[in-house]
Image 1 (cartoon, rainbow, N blue to C red):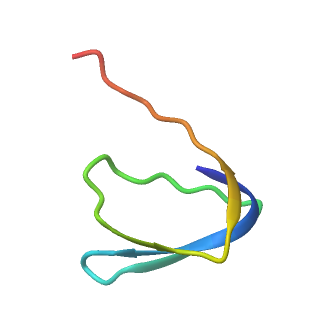
Image 2 (image 1 turned 120 degrees about the vertical axis):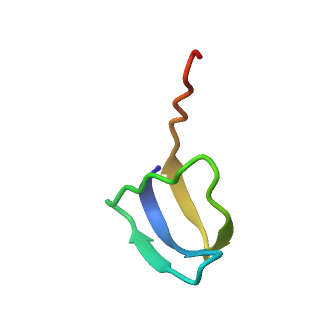
Length: 52
């Protein structure tokens, strides 16, 4: 995901916290679990899938 505006705090199930702001990108693994905390954002999201 690439954040155009705003931002988000991602807290994974293991407690790891990552803050992403406008102008930054993040890749989240397929099986990721956790919480998104935000006051709002605009993002571009791309999903890749294996053809297996």
